[in-house]
Length: 421
Image (cartoon, rainbow, N blue to C red; front, side, top):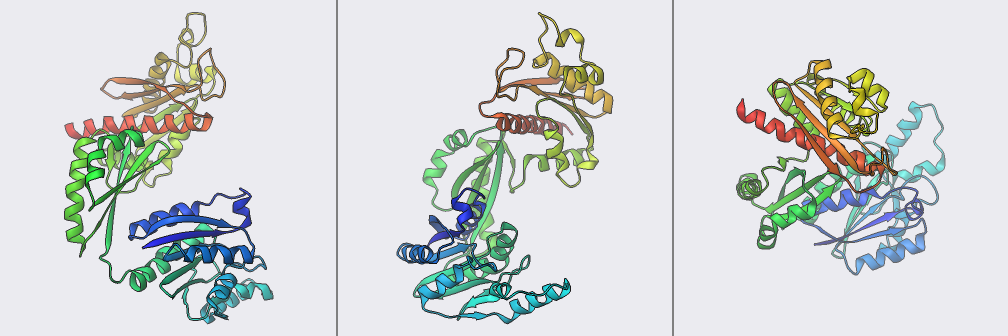
């Protein structure tokens, strides 16, 4: 079954907002066995939208719309679909009751245009909006299936998960076996290198399938299989996961869709270990990544952003001769990264001390190029490791990849600790 995603909104065409909904919907549809062949963006113009609908009907079975169902006169998605299908719009009573209650509770008069948010296409299944006011639509006609969702991701995602996806499974995919998926997460390896190590499995496998995709500093693989039940699915997915893990044990940190910092927090909490960090070019990004995870208070002792040489010297006792002078290695050096990691660990009495020092760019610093970064890991009663990184990209990329690489190296260290415990 083929799908087309149609995003409605002139603001997307103008580049004022990024269409993150398309990424989410493509992943979710693929997970239930519906392949997205096309993605279309249309401005707030009813005739052009009707043209896009007719074109999508010629090449897709499922048409998924996002946006254009709000209260204003340029919110025309339902109007355009209704005209193409030759149907009328009607008011959905539960949606209107919700609107009435919303405005009454705020003692604000409901304007006439707000009532447009309660309109649905005659003969459809209304899709309740748990986080907003505009009701969605699901309707089938002549072997085509139409899903209409709101534009804001905070409304679209729960509506798709709670309303549209069950409708598709029950109304459209009833003759299909359920599709079960599992996400494997990797760090310290790029998408192309990972794919190269799994190329024979990717080429050979038809069920389960392997689909790699990359994020900043991380790579994920989605394993998917059709099965009669979860037990049969797990048997097939487990077999393939073991094969992949045996080839990529140094990089596979989770078999669920979690960031590496979440895995680290859980591992350290289970081992009863603590952590601190001294950051220069990342400016606190390492600590921010870790503190974003619930439960991180159990493992984090503190962090120091030592951006200037003065702070490196005063707060973390980096020797002056390391920082200044013709023969000094400089702030961006293996020597300074080592001192920072060891000193922040000692000062905070942590089991692990982390450090980052580098040139985020775009220009040179200390006659050293942008993208040169040193990361350090000091362990109580253990060795201190320092790694040199050469990162290509802009300032944001250098900072993000430095953070992710340091977390990856910490995870590798924790795996060794776990094996010894």
